[in-house]
Image (cartoon, rainbow, N blue to C red; front, side, top):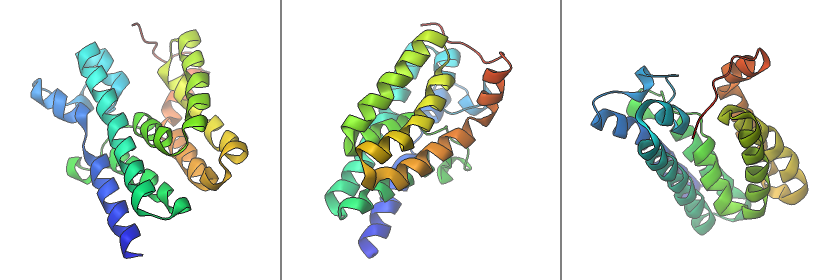
Length: 191
């Protein structure tokens, strides 16, 4: 039990590392006060450009990978998902930044890629298709959140409880986006 607590705490702290906040502050602002107010890749792209968005995306993925690696290395099989949940919670609710972080998608991507690569690739491919067709990152994220637990049930059943919690969390964090998608006012991205 002690090992689970330590691994979860380390994973949460990894999640608290917010590249979008650090980069935006280094550029003289705070991403949470610009654009959509979200501390994530899409808002960084719109507000600070491609390089800042790419750095944010990469670091968010890597911290998810690191947390999943910790879980996989130090915890028995099914408990590795606890580190995934912890790093995503750290990203969304970072204690270091007043519990105002991102929506957890890139961090979840890195985590799932490390623990369940086959599941990750299928969900990622579906989300990428939706993003390419709609030009809405949020539409791809919402689809990924819905597909993740469904596909996990068939492909990686031991990961299903974690996939369900991740999917529900991402959907809750995207509830405003879902409303804008439904009424046709969601912002589109341009590469």
